[in-house]
Length: 355
Image 1 (spheres, rainbow, N blue to C red):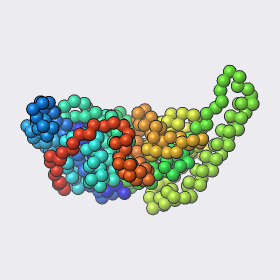
Image 2 (cartoon, one colour):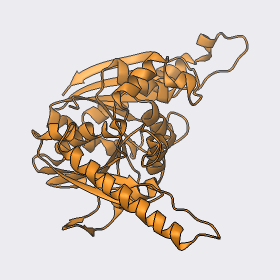
Image 3 (cartoon, rainbow, N blue to C red):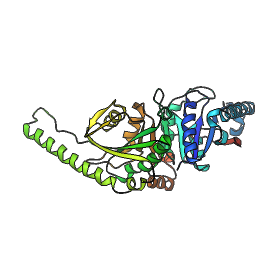
Image 4 (tube, rainbow, N blue to C red):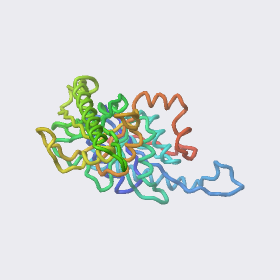
């Protein structure tokens, strides 16, 4: 599924931690890695210059040369041996460039770290990763600073997928299954479906026993409905279509008013009894960027960003297909959503090699 993997690098060792992960995925799928270096060059601010002349040609040339040599060194590393590599050196707005390359070069997945350096020729991977994940037309696999890398798990890999009863949330299941199968190969992958029942309790100074009993009844009913949904989910697409993958599927229902907190706790726990099985720490969390809101459901966009901010577990973020279509019809979410600088993206170097 992930045949073209985009790997943005800013020259930092932290960003390069994504290399072995991208390599493992590429080898499992027989795919290609696209190495991208966005060179951030200074602008010469002079009133007598046109916008195009504001870019210092010397700075551009130096930035291109430095970035090209850097990518050549990366492409020559042993961990990328025998993997087809494409190299791109561009300059401009970092987020817009990454998104443009993901679409123009038909990437199936973006792999990147969550933090990096700031300053001349480098960019803050924390904010960049958030913006790329929010707007990317393809899944984004974000590796966390200080967290465990999926490549450190031998013989198996597990992914936690929170679902809220909507098809939008379920959109993360198929790409997550392919991701964990590739990382676990030749071992077995594990897919753990989590349903968080977020029913607020009544509260107040005059809360009576009747209120307490009513809350308990509502929670019991909501839990039973959630468990029925989870069992039904196992027998229909997209879960039922994963039979060709070497994956074991488990389910879990928890009641917690704080959805993001429940997801993080489920992913980072050391191990606890769930029914007859012990469910331990998850290697990956996979979430959609959008979901329906309302009773028994939660707004996935905000919950995904909360998990991304707080959790040390790598996070696969998926935009549902019809959300991507709506994004395209509306002229792009960036034009109507969070303000981003409308900088010109100029291709100054494009190189392709195969090692």
